[in-house]
Length: 133
Length: 157
Image (cartoon, rainbow over all chains, first blue to last red; front, side, top):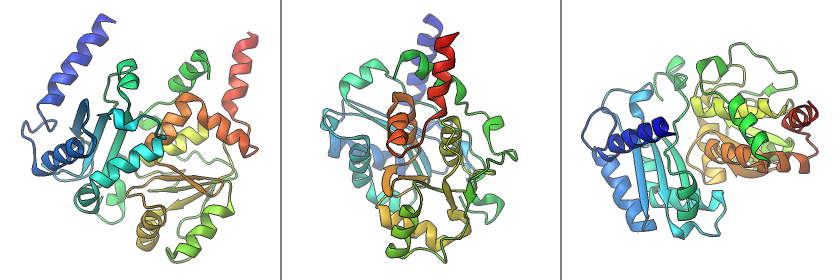
């Protein structure tokens, strides 16, 4: 438990620095943060740019994972919660954001498991056929 | 869902590449590809999602998924022993790829439909798998999840 706790803390430090790997928060990531904060007043917002793990150029802002913790989710089904997130990020999703993994939790749920999950490895996308994600 | 069943399910679900397609052909899965018939009018898609109890829209096929999130959906269905489902490859058909997003008002692939109803993407299916809801939803469709048999085996040891 101590080890996993330390790993978790290390992960959180990395997350709080913004985009994984580049050290700088790009404009899309900043927009996502702002819009989710405005729409959902989250207690916790953890956002990870996962583009580096996919078949897209370095510095891309196309694949994200987000954990949103908000009491606005109380009483809403997972589908309803995800749709709230999608609505807030409609512009990004119609634009550069190609994949968005969502963990939408109430504060109580987050306390039970306060971790941004990991995404499955990329399997190439349509690169094998067309060269676009 | 009991803790032991959840742990067993979680243990079986691995993200590693070995869990990918790798030529694993499951009898009964129809990788319908662009069999949606040239893409995506709402009426066509409505018929498509209602034609089978379990319908998924993927990047790639169940045998060869081309996206980690689509693969996750395939692996979850495999864990539950769901053998007979319709899988449509949006990479084969740009009209289908956009059409299904418009139909469900959902911006990403994969998409999962149970009994003609949109259920969600990979995250939601994973959540349902972990909390036991998927076993229940499959039961409502007359599909007996393989994980129930595993639990029975475990309990009887």
